[in-house]
Amino acid sequence: MLTIAGSGINDYSLQELSQKVCFSDFDCLIADVNFNTPANKELISNSVQVKFLSCKDIKPFILENTIKKVLYVVTGSPLFFSAAQVIMKDIKDVNLIPAESSKDYFLKKLGIAENEVTSLSLHGRESVDLTKFLTTKYTFVLCDKDSIEKLSELTYYIKDDLIFYLGSKLGSVDERIETVNLYDINAEACVPYVLLIEKKFSSINEGFETNAGMITKADKRVLTIQALELEPNMTMWDIGAGSGSVSIEAYKFFKINTVLFEKNEAQCRFIKKNLSNHKVASAKLSEGDVLENYENQPKPDRIFIGGGGEAVLSRIKLFYDELKDNGILVANIIGMENLTEALSSLKNSDLTYEIRRIDLTYYKKISENIQLSIPEPERSLYQLILRK
Image 1 (tube, rainbow, N blue to C red):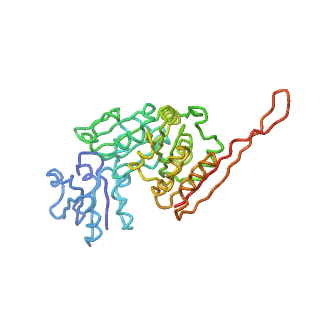
Image 2 (tube, helix red, strand yellow; image 1 turned 30 degrees about the vertical axis):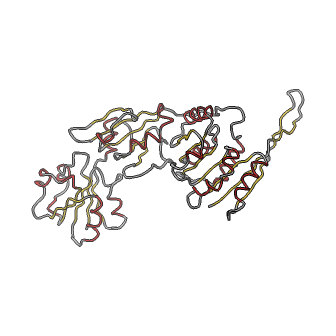
Image 3 (cartoon, rainbow, N blue to C red; image 1 turned 90 degrees about the vertical axis):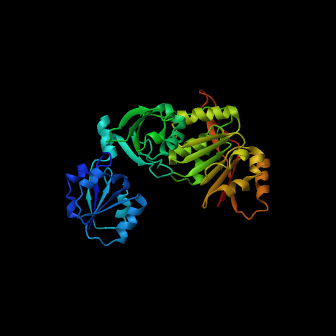
């Protein structure tokens, strides 16, 4: 029988747990190496086999041994982003003894109600689930030494709209609970730590700042996003981003990671304003020629080409090759010459593709006095779609 118990929030001490559990009732006690202290050993009877193991060794030990009664001690609570959850996937008959989690402890210290908070973990993870990030007033993040850098990148364009609360070494004599500037902090000095992010904004600005003609119109944005077949947490490259409107709308609808490529300095300034105004997280702006800057970016699930002219369209196969498996590339092209350039670049490849022509016509009143609507057609748009 396996029992998994939380030690609560403290400095790797078994003292709190010893008030709930009689250690001598077990044949073996397993805990992280940080619990290997003289004070903890004094609490455990000599009749109990004790194993202080690294995290990667604990699961194999439990699964490979036939010890009858095992007590596995985890920090905080086994029900909150714990290694216990990994073990419970393989062992059905598990007894759980809960304890106070880092989230419970931190919120209590700050006087914040749990129903205002969404919880995420970046501990040992490369990214957060964007569908849950900043969806409530507060977002609680369980962190490791690399998390501050990741969160700094994630929130770069909305940092002025957020407040960051740091909880470092909770339950120890070196405990710190304070508001911090996330972009000027030494993460290694804080470990172990958690962060609580308070969202100061409740509404999002509408509209886009841009130069005339440097924006994909609303109806065409919808058709473009539909063609991209996006899913949450995907990574999309937006090449020739213009105002950033397609990336911004895609983030709002699907919560994706975006890399925007734009070489026009004035447009880059507009993109930064638009990302900030629309409260877009997990966006990165690459300023300059995309052909010189794309190689060090995260590989995309989707690519949207909305600009860049012949230089980009003549290299469309190059960008297609950057897609992950099952990726999709969508290029919006105005002008037969540019479409011809793109198709010529694909002529000697074995790629299959789709071409759509999108024609939109709007009807507007001639004047307030004359109740007659006349058609005003938009420029035709060619949409080239490649699937990997």
